[in-house]
Length: 123
Image 1 (tube, rainbow, N blue to C red):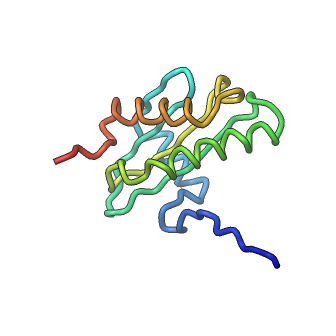
Image 2: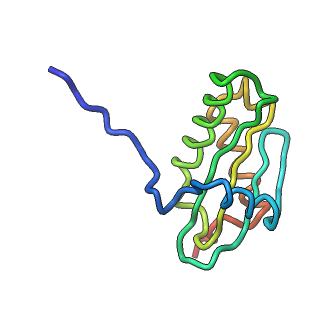
C-alpha cells in the first residue's frame, strides 16, 4: 500500500514569483541582517503577505543552495502565523546557514523578524 505524504506548498498568492517582484523588493525595500540571513521588507498595497527565498551562488553548488532554501522555507512555515500581513519579504541565506540546523535558522529568522517589526504583537 502506497501512502501519500501531504506536502506544504505556499499558495501562489503568497509567493514572490517574478524577477521584477524580487527586484522591486531589493531596490525599494529595507534590509535587516544577522550572521545567518538577510531579510528584505517592502510594504505592499494588499492584505496578503508574499515571500521569496534566495541563496546566492557563493554558498556553493545547487545541492547546497537548495538545502539552504529548504531550511528557510521550513523555518518560515513553522512560524508564518507570527508574521504581519501586507508586506513582501525576501529571505536570503548566508554562508553560516550551509552547516546550520533548523533550530538555528528558526532562531535567526525570529530575531530578525522582531528587529524588523514583522512579528504580530500578542494582545
